[in-house]
Length: 183
Ligand code: HEM
Image (cartoon, rainbow, N blue to C red; front, side):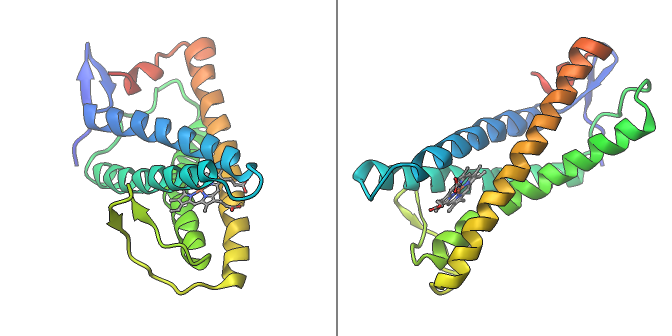
């Protein structure tokens, strides 16, 4: 397992990890905002259907990136925590990171199975039909709609905690932790 790289003696993430992190973050925010917007459009309009498709494609891309990130993570250890960090903060940071890893899989999967349970197979970018793994099921559809929403809210809450920690490190501890995740 490799340990990331260093610049001026400061350990940092590899460029692959940095690219995967920021691309995932951008697409997750886009999928989240689009998801919240599209469900509020009344009735069934061409715009609504278009947003649903874009939302699903974004989500499937997030899932694919999550697979790549997990593969990267299994082969690389992230740079070590700053020595000044108390044990409880290390524990909390690692718990939030692993929970976010779980959610970048669980959120798209719940949306994917919701779509299948609703009887709408997913055609990635309008050209690649993805596997239809379950039959339409109205009751499961109801459940998965709530699950997709709840997992999204959990992810949003953890992202807020994650951002609060970045702000604390950057402007209170001033330990330049953010620089490790910047190119
Ligand atoms: C990171 C990935 C994803 C994020 C952040 C995300 C986020 C959201 C959000 C915030 C909503 C609105 C929930 C509500 O207010 O009820 C939503 C709804 C929805 N999502 Fe996702 N989603 C993701 C992935 C997916 C995927 C991969 C699919 C399917 C392939 C999908 C299918 C849907 C559908 C069909 C709805 C509409 C639910 C309804 O009709 O109430 N999502 N999503």
